[in-house]
Image (cartoon, rainbow, N blue to C red; front, side, top):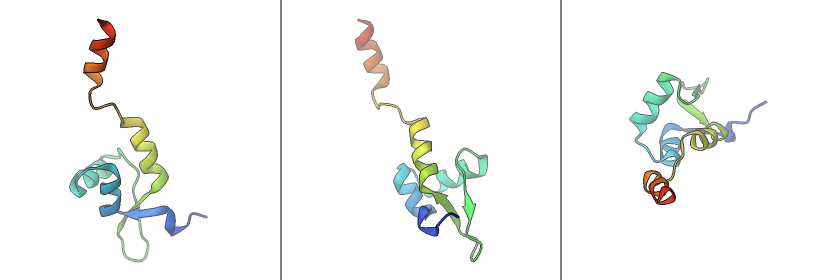
Length: 73
């Protein structure tokens, strides 16, 4: 059974990912990141482990192209 403490609301999830809340809502609507609903109030909830997995899949170095060019020369 999953504990409620394993979930965060939209504002905290967006902060963890470093994006705006509306961006996170769009990603969830598209299915890019799993979203759950609190059965008591309908709030969007995001599992912390799903956020970590999303970051792992999408994280790239900021200067990835520059790093690749340096290695090639």
